[in-house]
Length: 263
Image (tube, rainbow, N blue to C red; front, top):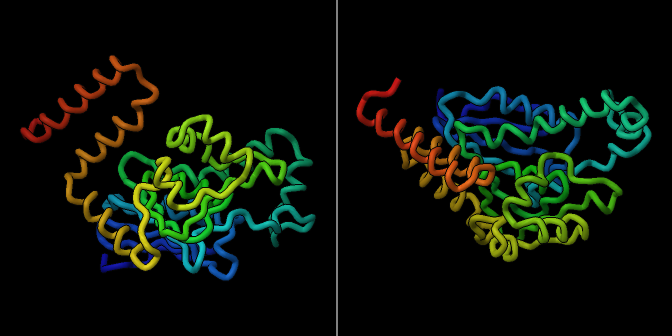
């Protein structure tokens, strides 16, 4: 595989791979990378095509905005070409509606899989589905012009693309409720202060800052990062004593591997 091979380019999503680093790019800047069911299927497919050699996945959007959220055409009677409109879906049965939303969610789930670390490089607007896509990643590097907003409630909806769990984990219940229920903008400086953003840099420095974080993550052995990620992801669901046990088991695996005794 040569540098920056393009493995997938369809429906506003491009997947390219350079050795251990994959880059997923939203490629519809004319519409501020607005999202649709076709784009969600493309994101899911990008995850399926990710080579096993990849350790870091960078998610970025072309143009001035990371993603301005759901394309409002979804709420028109005609919807998208070849797609049922959201209004038609609402008129269907409960099982069909649940299955359709579950399929949409697949585009947002694979970013946290155990064997990779995902980084969202966010500039401009990250609204609604765009906010949730940034939250789907493990880490967020933001330009100073980044603006997050969860606008679903203003449309009479709820955030349903897997964003509520990471948001509460990052900022706590009370602040998450306030952000979601008001739909207000969270600018980059506040995002860094409350834990939404890991790094905030001038817009021109966003690619370099993302590359620096990628290089730092690649410096550690892959298995150690994988074990550490699993420990941290599971910590909130365990008691203190359970976490101690999990730490011991993980360290035993690492020590045996380093000693050449691993399976």
